Every structure is written in structure tokens, then in C-alpha cells.
Amino acid sequence: MKPILRRRSTEDDGRDWMERLVAIGLELRQVLLAHPSVVRLLPGRIPFGPNGLRLADHVIGVLRRAGFDDRLSGYGYLLLMFYVVGFAGQEVAFGKGAANQARLTQVNEFLRGLPADRYPDLVAVADDLTGRPGLTHRFELGLVGICKELAVQAGRTESP
Image 1: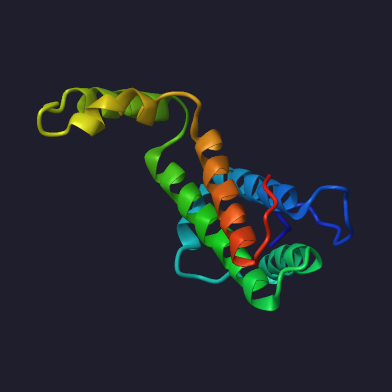
Image 2: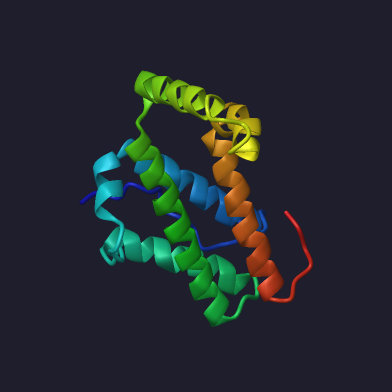
């Protein structure tokens, strides 16, 4: 199997650990979306092939060199993988392209048509759930949240 992620340098590239982790997560998500059959195979499996091992070593190395202990470095890798694979899996299941937009329209119409007296909050946010900014923005929001909590767990106070 050929590598689907670019080879990574373990040296400092001028970005802090959060920027690097977010960039890795964004790139991995794009790779997975470009290879939907891979996304369907990953849940429940640990990617221990050569590419998966390189990725694991790289992510753990970014965190260790940033001063995280071994436990949080390992957790950071697992959280990144679980989050990216889960998010990409939902995106692949939902569909891409024109079918995606048609499905979003259907979901929006369904949510807006719910009885507001029974589901007032869901009806109120229906347009925000299915509108812009899109999934990349939402994905990055969650990824930054994971990074911030890793920083909290490590006793750091920096923010992205």
C-alpha cells in the first residue's frame, strides 16, 4: 500500500504543537474523505501498517517534543485518530457532492417542520445545523477543543 499522507519531518517547522496537530487532523480528514472505502474499514481497527505507525509516531513525537508526558502524548494520538476517523465516517455516510446538498436540504426542511412546541430549541437552530460555515469549520472547532483540553490536562495555559 502506498503512503497516503505526506512524509513528515520530526523537526520543528516553526509552528507550535497545536497548529501542527490541527494541520495533521485536517490533512488526515481530507485523505480519508478522498478514500471513503478506507474510512469504512477503520472503525474498530488500530492502523498498525507502516503508514499508520509513521503517523502514530509523528503525532506522539509532536506532543512529546512539546513537553507532554508519555501518557498525554499517547492519549493525544488516540483522541486525534478517534475524532478524525469518526467525523470522516459520518461525512462519508452522509454523502458528498450534489447528493450531500440535497440531503442537507431534506434534513433542514424536516427539522424546520418539527412542532416548535415539542422541539423549540432544535427548530430554532435548524438552519445553523445544516448551513454555513460548513463541516470543515465544525471539524476544526472540535479539533481545537481537543487540543485545548490536552493543554489543560498538562497544566498549560496557552491557547491556539
